[in-house]
Amino acid sequence: MADLHFELVTPEKLLRSEDVHMVVVPGTEGDFGVLAGHAPFMSVIRSGELQVYSGPNTVSARIHVEGGFAEVNEKGLTVLAEAASDA
Image (cartoon, rainbow, N blue to C red; front, side):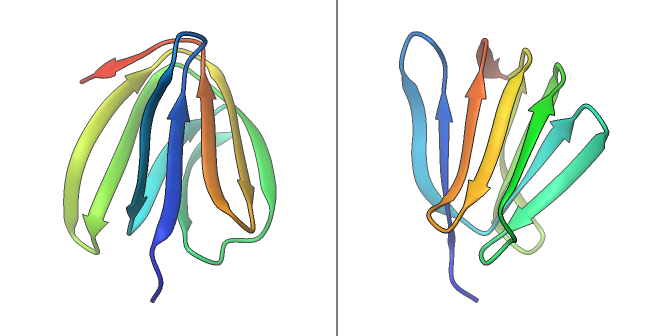
């Protein structure tokens, strides 16, 4: 399967821009996973932990985010977080 393009942005800067296998996002309605080819989707995110997977079973990063928005479109996943730091 093709990789998912993932970008994490805060008001200060672009923190990550990379191709990954999957990202699990802490949405206000519950956590959700995004793989390449996901249907277009927007969600408000709650404070919590983003999990970035480099492979099907490999978490390559855990990033604490403080609120914001997530958008999935044909280009990939963009997370606009109020603040973010490595967990």
